[in-house]
View 1: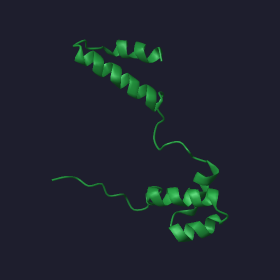
View 2: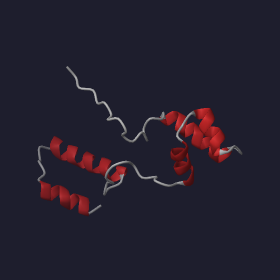
View 3: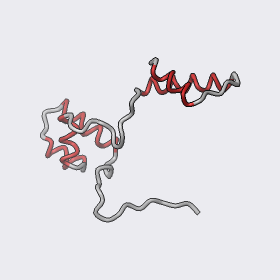
Amino acid sequence: MTLTYKRKPGARSYRDCDEEKMFKAINDCKHEDVSIADIVKSYNVPFRTLWNKVKGHHCKTVGGQTALSAEVEEELVHYLLVCADYGMPLQERDVKLIVQHH
């Protein structure tokens, strides 16, 4: 039996809107001469969320921010997998040294 997550009543609903609809609404705001209120009505997306995304506020991802970029993380994973293929396990200190040199 699998567990399904049910949001608590009154919890934040910032992820209720469809990402594709939000992307189209942002593009319409930036490229067409239409008010944000009209776009909110046509796409049925939250006004404040659209406003923040168009103005560039709160552009970071939800949760803790990563110390490394996505490219550096992928490169690190590649290094770790190569070491594993060679049968040379790395300890925590070794991984820290690799990260420090990037």
